[in-house]
Image (cartoon, rainbow, N blue to C red; front, side):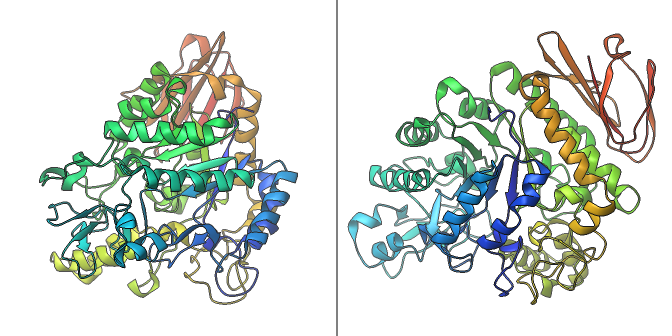
Length: 540
């Protein structure tokens, strides 16, 4: 099966299921729930980092790439998870954080101790530039007592690696080979498009320094080297690159098969349409026109030039899409299905983030004390320092925090939502009593809708392979597109608002077959009335 037909499910291991009652999710918990994921119909599970880590950035600060963090279990637990998953026809994708390592990593510790070889594993300078960290503040920190500084584009506990050093590349390629030998069939590369820094680093007042390290030509060379040395040797491997502040043009290059780089890329532009003036820690309603324009631009250009998108609404770094785009008080279920159709019928490989398939919401916390994410805590303080009231700063964090998606999976209505029998590492969301797997499987309809979408992708090649063209790009409420393959076509219409709207169907679809619809429309003619948050797909 091609990666174009597959559907990938992301698990944040810390929050999926706790089996040893320490308040933290673990690998045996994931293994225990594999039948649930088999029931859903997904083909591959992407695990956020499970490696040894001081957890300053929830595992994205890796201290050892080939050791399992004891909080998640043992290597034996991993091997058992792999075996059971494969028996169920499910493959594993691991998260590779190759731009930086934890400053507790052996390489950094040896560098600090004066080992010249390992000092060249990092980006050290006598004179720091004016670059800013993506987590706030300066992107440089003192390198011990040496008078030099090390680059950290993210948290100061995450030191950027020097990819220009062939020994660094060899070390990282060995990591991939280690996991491939264990049977891993997918890799998700964290912020992989920032690994190629300019050779000479200079002050760059515009955009916090981003032009000097984002999508540089050498990054493509590094990824091609990695492909040829490791995963490119296995034609069944699936790779996805997380791209920071990227462009369509670059993502076409990263994913065109003949370039031998990556299978697909994540971009985040569509999840910044509720950023006022491009700034995350702000409040504003989402800009639907911008959202649609981005989907159409990426869909059309990737289709025309042979690139491939990884499609998603949710992940461990984003608030729940339902809270961002849908009137959840009145239309949570219809809205969940509409958002699902918008990407699962699209051109690209869909990703489901844990809990999305039951319509989970942001946790609706009551105070800052409930947040643990370093980025959120820093942002709150920066908002206060900038003159916001505590109440306003809290409301902004509540909207945008990464912790919104990291809350424990809601399995049932018991005290800690069936995630654990003890108080979890992060407070359970307030809706767990009603929105949980047990209730959804018994009386809900979102889970079964996801099952339908997954089956359709495998049954209809026009969904997995077809081209993309925009439909009604100027419509104020509808995000619509047409997929085409040979003499088959699929029209997908998504109403992004809680108001009805009427559209005129193109002649070719006036007598087509309805493949899926969240309102069970039985008949229609040339004019179609779309109900609040209705989604409908017509095939011919």
